[in-house]
Image (cartoon, rainbow, N blue to C red):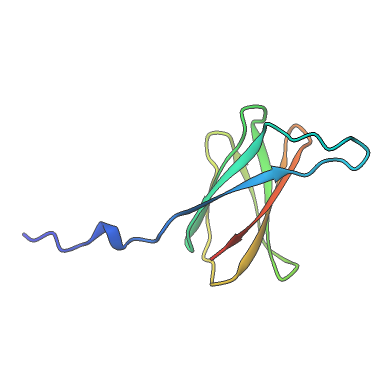
Length: 105
């Protein structure tokens, strides 16, 4: 019984941080909260800051929304097949904040 399956050949994981979009009417103070986004071409996993419980996530490419999901602080996993390119990830949290960033596959 040989173990030829190489785990190291699995999808490479990347991580970006989605930063809070500030309301234009407020002075731009850097936020201590941000969303961690770990992703491969097969899934996106978002880690919400401790000040929110859930979020609606929008995934866009070329200005077109290709996925909308609801995530929670306990489960931020979104299975999605992404081809090479750039994607804009936006999280609208239950406490009224918006976090966004770009991932590149």
